Length: 312
Ligand SMILES: NC(=O)c1ccc[n+]([C@@H]2O[C@H](COP(=O)([O-])OP(=O)(O)OC[C@H]3O[C@@H](n4cnc5c(N)ncnc54)[C@H](OP(=O)(O)O)[C@@H]3O)[C@@H](O)[C@H]2O)c1
Image (cartoon, rainbow, N blue to C red; front, side, top):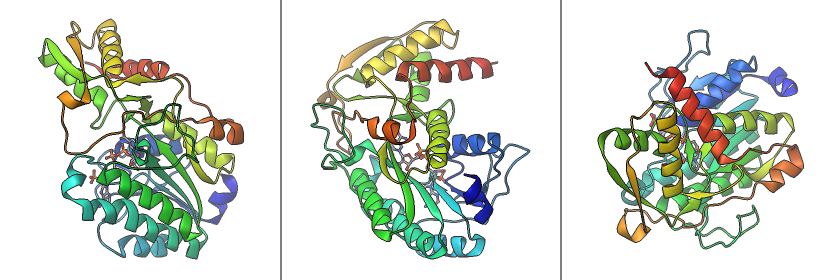
């Protein structure tokens, strides 16, 4: 990354999001203080030692990102901002498309113009979910939701821009902070004796701090193009919930585990359809860069340990 840094600053978009916060931490640990952009211009989670915030940049506003890039002339832009409300996107398709596709096209065009490198994130939701083996990068996408279609349009727009870019497709992201399945389960587990969780959607839960560290390694290895990044192994949301409760009780985060009933997706209807099979094959990234994530259960232990260490 040293050669990139000689050419200009690192701009982190979405610095207050789940992944953005972990990227910010990982960059600071590597001795890099990125310029941090948020929608509101506030930067509430900035560590005291840290990077300056920037004026607000709302990706929903056409031209806002182009103006920001022209102003700071970054060498590297890491885009952790996205419209991630999967169900709400079904009733806000224009906004989802604007943020996940049109703003990404704008980012690609501006980066190409400035000679900046872009790191971007996409999703397993670009696939239909009818796969029978882990999805590879060259498997045909077929998104079944507005969110998935908007993210697919974004990855394609970035590739078409001609900017030097790395896009990592992720799945089932979580952290010790922010809104995610792990934190929802811990909250429900504290309030209820029994839960019902879908057992027919399969994927691999991925800690955001692993993604952040892997991103920096992939940049250092010079990775460009589209790659899948997911841990080893697979489970269902039901299996993930059970593992959360076992780990949480063992660490004293919950006094006891609720019973977790396995249900089919049909028993838990949501506005957006979700792929039944979300398992990503990360072999190409490992072959090209040496980056390989451990089994998802190792990541869960790490994040539960973080929560236990922070518990009063
Ligand atoms: N979470 C998952 O399970 C998952 C799975 C696969 C892929 N991904 C991808 O991973 C990336 C990171 O996701 P995440 O989990 O970190 O999501 P997140 O926690 O929802 O963070 C997204 C960030 O984008 C910002 N943002 C949204 N609309 C914006 C706008 N109009 N202008 C400026 N900023 C805006 C949000 O700011 P506000 O806080 O102001 O809204 C938030 O900080 C995304 O590309 C996502 O598609 C996530």
